[in-house]
Every structure is written in C-alpha cells, then in structure tokens.
Image (cartoon, rainbow, N blue to C red; front, side, top):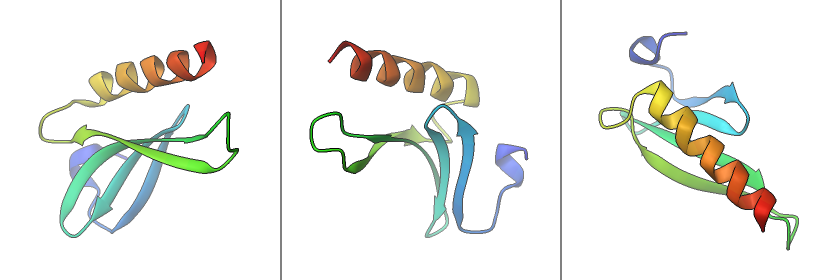
Length: 71
C-alpha cells in the first residue's frame, strides 16, 4: 500500500517494528517493540509522514533496533 493512499484509521506494518499509524486524520511513523527490561509493549513516535519518507522511517527504525540490541 502506498503511504499517501492509506485513508482508513489503523496501524499498517512495514516490518521490523515500523508501523504507519493513521488516527484523527493524521499519519505518523511509529516503532513498536517489547521493552527488554519490563517485557511490556512500547511505542515510540518517529515523526509525521509529511516530514519523513518511508526510507527515512526505515532508517530510524533500524537505529532503534540497534539501540535496543546494544542495551
């Protein structure tokens, strides 16, 4: 699905913890992961779609995965 075509509210996964979140008319990138300490699901905002392309969001998600792995 093309990012600009998504209109129905919800979460759309790209893989590796990267999600496109649509709610209240806004589109944003989020990174979802399980906290290595508490084992609870967490969501980290990566920024709005208007400011970050899919490739930039993928780079940010990769940096998040690396940071989690490194502790």
